[in-house]
Length: 264
Image (tube, rainbow, N blue to C red):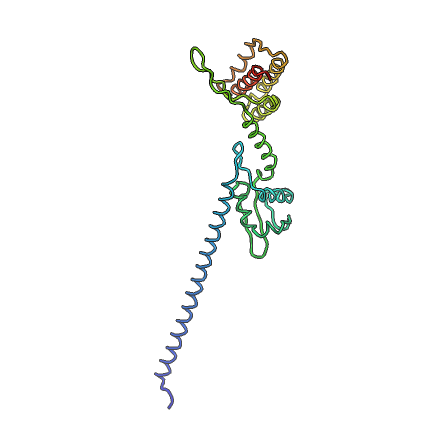
């Protein structure tokens, strides 16, 4: 028996309803799958950040500088070799060849560099393409590390004198630099500080430092500290504006004097 027009209309409506339900189920499944992928991606990212942080936080700090782990340092050298200068400080996989042992955990290694404060951003694609934006401090890391390690050794080589009891109070001597460390290193450090902090007084401070070096040379040669009120007055004139310079000069003078007293 042929279906009536009403039966055909009802059947068509049921098919459309079933089709719409299936479409909705598929759409909901796509949304759920996408949300799950985003959740998994976030969990992987968070796990990578935590793993990187555990490595970075376990590294020593010398003179205020975080020393990177060996794998990170190897990657830094590779990136430095592959950087040929561009305003974006951008390096891609087309610029360098990274060893397999680093390539296998590239996102982790890049994340460590970011947490070390040596890169600003990075992206690693599933296709194998990657790009990273380095910071200028990455290019000078090796030199900065050598300087920080040297400064740390100088601190550890200091001889603690402590406090001497005097009739009218305590005379705090502080730390005296070991005689194996040259005065020239301290002078060079003060020169760098003058360049960084001297401002308009750089020339005058440099001249005072050169005069002070002659004073130290004479003291070390003669083992005698002569009176030099004029020089003291000249450096005292900078006390308010450049107290750090006055402190460095007095500290170095005290170090040399104590070395003489110790028979160095």
